[in-house]
Length: 226
Image 1 (tube, rainbow, N blue to C red):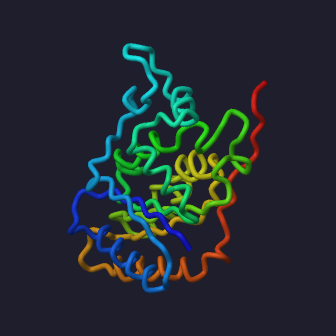
Image 2 (cartoon, rainbow, N blue to C red):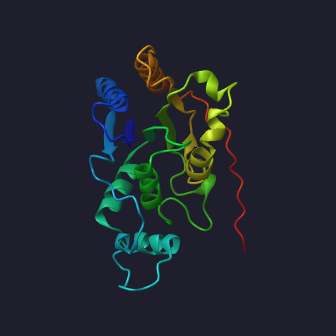
């Protein structure tokens, strides 16, 4: 099994990095292949601009989606984007690990999505969802939050899958990933919780049973406009 983990957390001493180390050690122990993209360590450029597309003429108007597809097809994407796309092509499973900030992923990770999932590489005008170029790969979120589990079930914050709908449906499902349920570490900021032990065990269980985990029921219908 080939696993790509993309992590966005600014502190190597964090709970997230401890979880990452545990996951990587476990996967290697089980003889799986694993690659890690540490966005803060790489000082990832979050914003899309004309420098991403090496065939773009200076001063020409930028059409980000269209230009990304043209640059991908001509092999003229910037080298950092090419390197990440190669990792995605290589992987069977892609894990997006991050602390939840304001109901979403940190800005660097959103910037990774914006820049790496270019047109033609991850979707086309005619191919999305089950027919997208990356269809068949599996993906899921590993995230930490500072509140109890009940806050995202019976509490005021909403169901966790509703919170992550823009990511799980608007990104993962749209580009063809089989979207597995997210793994959440609750009460991440509390010294009284067993967040580390619980989430690392859940991650291990996930990989042990990866072939039988039921994907989320995401909408896959898409009719391209004429």
